[in-house]
Image (tube, rainbow over all chains, first blue to last red; front, side):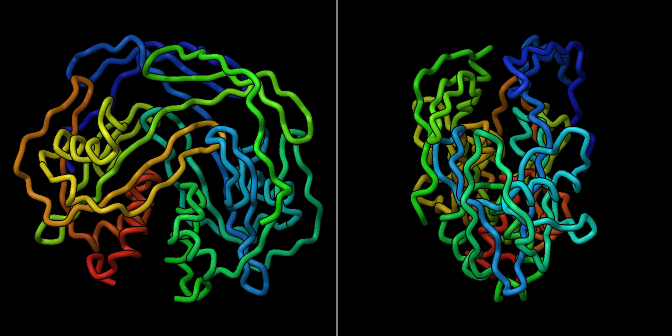
Length: 189
Length: 189
């Protein structure tokens, strides 16, 4: 790695969020070549947690849910935004219980990987965890705007759904693919 | 799959983009439970193309670039937004030449996969391609805000950088991981 590539310098920041639900910033920045850009727009959407939950019979817990950003019904892993006043792990535990009715202990979630989501326009990182021995021991609790169908499928079948493009949301794909590299036996190598 | 999960109905759309560089929409929507939400915000950021270019000696072409959204210098695959008046494939060819000085023929790019980027808040899909026999036969051409260092590394080493978290942008991770499943010999299985 050279020192050819340098970060930009933030000169001014303006909060132009249209809503608490869509944070937006206007930055005045200076580039390494001296150029000053008055209006660079980015959204600090906040961090995301996601859980690959595996049941005792080696099924993966999936959610089926309408997502209005893209306007489609999607098959994904459970997860959501980091919650207010909660750590990433606490948020992952909470999302799993709220979306799927699975109450897990924080110490049972193992970190798999993190990934940056559109680093040009967003400030958002997803943190992915795996949970073994997932139990449907609680009840779903939705926000009024949420409606989630929970589906379980054998882990090798879930990997096949990634390969064939049925599971095609980047967060879910990435966490499944990385988990399959770290725990190949689960996915039937 | 059941019919439990239904799409929302778009009632009104307002363009509240602060700039051509950050499209933003305010939607009034009706949910399947009848609830009307007056202010759902989403950004139709537009589609992205990305290329995993492999040289004749089995190296992967990587870019090192500062991304101000996340505020970090990142190692990624070449790519960018779909360009005006260009197809996805034409855009992929153009981005590869502009960022890396590699001029390829459209028919030499093979589709690997697509993925949705934050389907809750964005309307954005990335399309990933692989190019074999990549040649540095042209010259880089940057926008005035761009500065890109091109690096080539052996394909198995690039997969190791994904495994260890050094390559951690979701688009690049996903395309490398999917290509490694479709062309395992390249990555030294």
